[in-house]
Amino acid sequence: MMGQKERCFVPLVNVSLEELVPQDHFYRHLDKTLDLSFVREFVQETYAGGGRPSIDPIVFFKLQLVLFFEGIRSERQLMRHAADRLSVRWYLGYDLGEPLPDHSSLTRIRERYGVEVFRRFFERIVEQCQAAGLVWGKELYFDGTKVAANAGKESLKPRFYVDAHLATLFATAGEGGAEGTDQASSHEASAHNDAVQSEEMQAPMQLPVALSEEMREDLTQTNKERHDWIAALGAQDRKVTGRCYQRVADLQVSTTDPDATLMQTKHGVDLGYHTHYVVDGGKARIILHVLVTPSEVMDNQPMLDLLWRVRFRWKLWPRQATGDRKYGTEDNLLAIEDQGIRAYIPIPDMDHRTEFFSSDRFRYEAERDVYICPAGKDLRFDRPHSTERSRRYRARAKDCNHCPLKAQCTTSKQGRTLCRSVDEHYLDRVRGYHSTEPYKKALRKRQVWVEPLFAEGKDWHGMRRFRLRRLWRVNCEALMRAGGQNLKRLLKKRGWGRRPCPAEALHAPSFWSLLGVCLILF
Image (cartoon, rainbow, N blue to C red; front, side):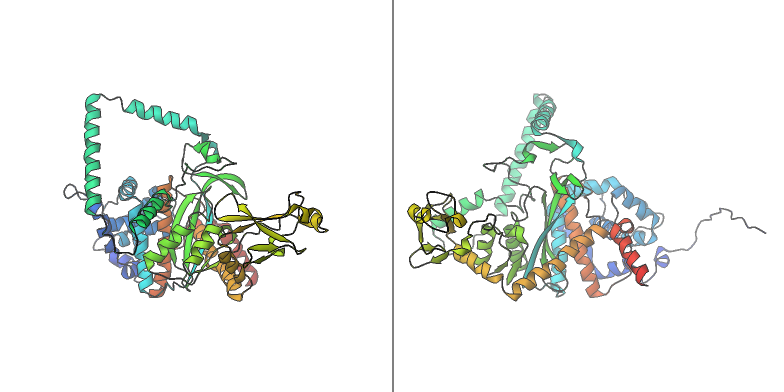
């Protein structure tokens, strides 16, 4: 006889959520090994002293961790998932009949916290990793990856049109009457005065250093003119433009995500960002810093700011800093070597782009300050190059014009020229590393230290495409993702539980290719 199941539900009696979640569940292990009570001190200043109680900030960050571990792409989907999973309810501390927070509340909380709270959360995870002995600190590895923005290139509009539209919009909004304007001005003035008083109260005490007043003023002026990539949250300085080019982002802007810029991918051109990682050289591969910039920002530009931030924040003195060829600018190499750190970074080969003799065919004599060409003639100092950090050397025209090797050296009738950096001894030292085994080992190690972290983030944790928009929001998202990756290493150190499988990872191409290999092998 064929059975037929009737749908009949009766109220549960004497059933506790504590009994329904297995004792060996991953979220039980996560709750036991990671105490999130430290987030209260981070966010205390963002709440008023009275009023209606808000959502517990610990609940907010627990939801962010669930978002990370289970590969969920939206907060609306996250709350549906939390309502449907007993283990997530238990982890959040909400009973079966207790209503969960609304997904829109998470957006408002993130707006209130800002990037600084997310950065402090990420740094607290790194602190725990450092206390657990997972941070080595002797080697640092730098790399970046492209991440698509949550916007399409069809949203690009001329920048002057968008700027004019926004100016008109805000001008119209400001025509609400003189009274409203006066009130707004008074509120702004009050807020400005409070901010000034707060800065004066929190001004750090100057430490005694052996600097003259003139050197201190020069240093202060230099720091004011320098673009701080971390303080700017990765935003580029649009006041600086090139001589022979103009950036596309200066002419076009996306109306969906104005901070995203065009980037080249294997599928064509798309809007996106660059995510930069600084990874410790220890076995745990702890991410020490993360920064998201628009895709038009070159990898080498924020490198020094990331390096100094990692050194002083975590009190490290690394023996070497390793990156690929993109980081090999003269400014980066000189600054790293000047601090006693070995720059294991390939120097771009600019001399072998033509068929003529490269600079390595010329011998430099420091005593006479001359170069000796392959034919034995002198190239003497001519004048400074385009900048004061480079010197130009030139051979005599009659020596070059009568030289039998001229066809292999130059086509100029004024004689062959060479440029030498005033800090060439630093560059020669870096070139000397290239033939050593530690340098080759560092480059090999970088490929298996940083790039797998990007692959892990893209295949398991939604790193292929940001779900949020605007630069400060994608930095919040990247900080939570990097913090989650560090947390996985910390949990492994403290004892690992059964980690939930992200649903999105099941759709990743690498997952199915790996599954196919396993089926073939077994």
